[in-house]
Length: 443
Image (cartoon, rainbow, N blue to C red; front, side, top):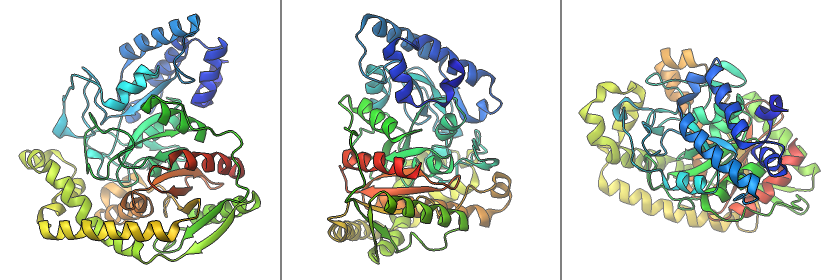
């Protein structure tokens, strides 16, 4: 039985624990052993946490034996992006600037998830300070993509996606500021949930842009994402039973999102739309020119805030950074306060326009990424290629962050090509029900 554990969803493992068919200690040891011997382990995990994991698994085993499990995922081990604080364990956010940074307590979401019985396998590699959608990180490590080991895994939750895709964790928790959950999930054929800004607390998470940062899971199923969200909030998960696409109304975003799609992402998206229609969904298209205007504001809003948060740390030792990431941060240094304030005021107006034009629809659809995972070696040796691919990788997902939406990416028939469903802020439960029905249609 254990030889199938690496391919099971977190929910499936949790149900087997509940039946008494899996002991959480044995399950945790199984994944710890895989992490120890896997050829790509050191490229995926920055820091396994075996001592912590074993202690948490023993507690889960005791609860399972006595009939006091705290939820379906009690005893299921998962990985955590290396920007979530872990008590007495280094949290470095993929940067030499934070080397040996060791918090004294867990991040809020990790603390809650642990209380709900989830087991922490370790901390996964990521883009430096989370400021890239590619997952390339020569400072620490660059995780591989499950469909092309010479390609990047997507960022910035690169190691989290790889940990699940390579069977080194049943699920992972990451962060998403401009696409950092959804891009690696899509490129590794996983489900990824970007939560609404403010839905989950950021306390104890190393920031990039606090007005855009969000927390979200990467997993093998929509059900897993629903359960993980609930575990990080200590509440009941969304009810996914009976979810259907009958009478669902979707909008395909024409503006920006469909520009310059590479052939395979375009094919995957069109195939997905066909399958959704066959399952009963009604699909319309919309031009939203304000989307392009919002995208033009992103360079002001993201870089100014990121540099404002990190300038002192960065300029104390800029030589420790990967030059493209350093350059991207420093773009924020020249932005005027008046321009930053004006950009935010206009973005709030555009958000209102978006909400009005998309009201009455269940979700807005778009390809998760317009490109496939780029080759890691070429990214390292071709600066122009790196800059162009990074902007393209983040282009579609960033729309969700700019509009403060919740968003769910699902795999399509094309490897490394996802389709995203975006709904209004705070509508995660409804989005997950849509996702559950769409997942069946796309399978």
